[in-house]
Length: 186
Image 1 (cartoon, rainbow, N blue to C red):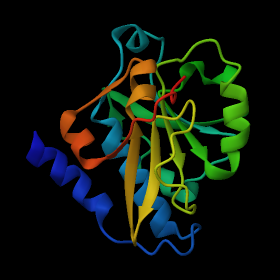
Image 2 (cartoon, rainbow, N blue to C red):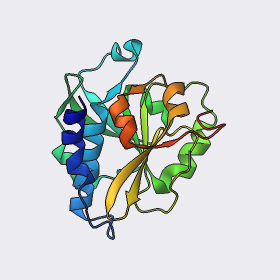
Image 3 (spheres, rainbow, N blue to C red):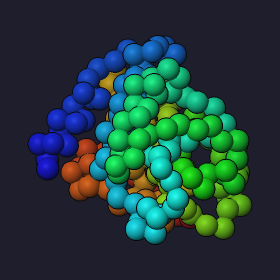
Image 4 (cartoon, one colour):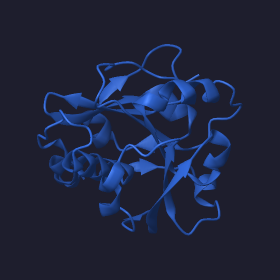
């Protein structure tokens, strides 16, 4: 398992120039990163029963992946082809398995999630590769994509992961920077 995980993730840890976030190469690396990570996430059984013929990657209010997402569309995750969908608010997220949040949309998302009464089993990912806010746990966010020099890495809030009833491979967690801040994920 460790060798497989390493092989899957090695390509996304390869250095990329992150100076221009609109660079198509950066967008493709982020998309590949997300595709490889979701393969090591387990959703609760009841969420897998949701009527769906696709594995849906949703964007909150804007698409931070741009053209990079095209390379992962129709790839199979949990036996389902991956599709993407733009949502304007969390009430539209009932079919989302993954919710990608651009850094610019994080304040709006946090305001909306603070009013939510339930944490659905959705893998929430914030793209902070253009920001300096590493090591910060944001309410309602499981994973931060972050810049590590000229590479992309990730941080995981394990409390939010548990609150959303998701689990990740221990091998994946070993590669992450763990953010386990008291009070996060609530």
